[in-house]
Length: 195
Image (cartoon, rainbow, N blue to C red):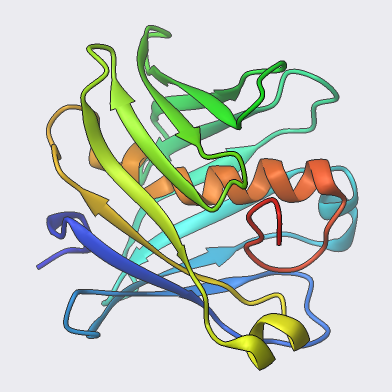
């Protein structure tokens, strides 16, 4: 089975000190490793807020890529398939009391909404009929790990895998990470706001 065949994913960031790029392991419901997400960057790109994340299955086959170009205000993250063809993009709403990201198709039509709670620990994805199709939760790893590292864990549960391209759904928590981390000026791993 490919990583794209699963509807429940557990994602755990590797604890790595003095790093520029992040690596995440992806597990299934039974804690079997089914893939990885690797950040491809250098110091200058990170300083400019440019990010590239590559999503791999367990056989190290590239499935899709998320890219965030440099931007001051209109923050977008574009998702591409393994042949560099655009699948869609996320756009962060500039003014919102809770974090919200509009989800667009490759044609530029809005197809969903990624929205968080006030603390930005839990997120859900809705289609245009406001039907919940996926849920993303931060998982706390224990006081020592939370205090001494920026490595995070979270799960994504997909309820309606055909409503929106599953690659967009799997990329969603990383989109939140890229934008929220940049806005807070944090360095390192997955950090929901409020942590």
